[in-house]
Picture 1: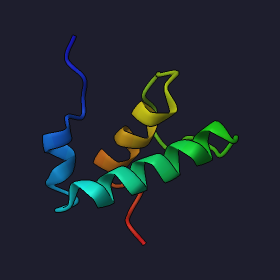
Picture 2 (picture 1 turned 45 degrees about the vertical axis):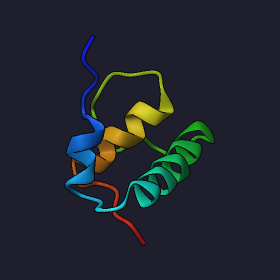
Picture 3 (picture 1 turned 90 degrees about the vertical axis):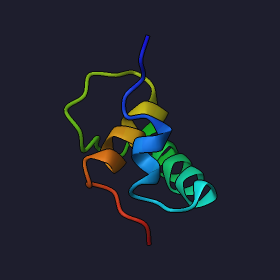
Picture 4 (picture 1 turned 90 degrees about the horizontal axis):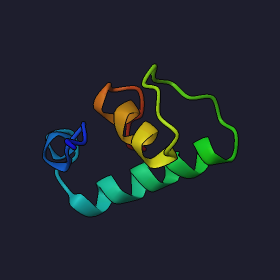
Length: 62
């Protein structure tokens, strides 16, 4: 099973792994709490949804 987007793909958006983890986890918590999902990917995992949103440019670092 290949997981998309890969960490390598996401690191092209964020230069720092730690920053990527913080943004992804923050967005995943928002999704788990009921925030609307911004991607059309059909997935149950809030972390995967957050990663897809970041890869699609729908979530940016603050």
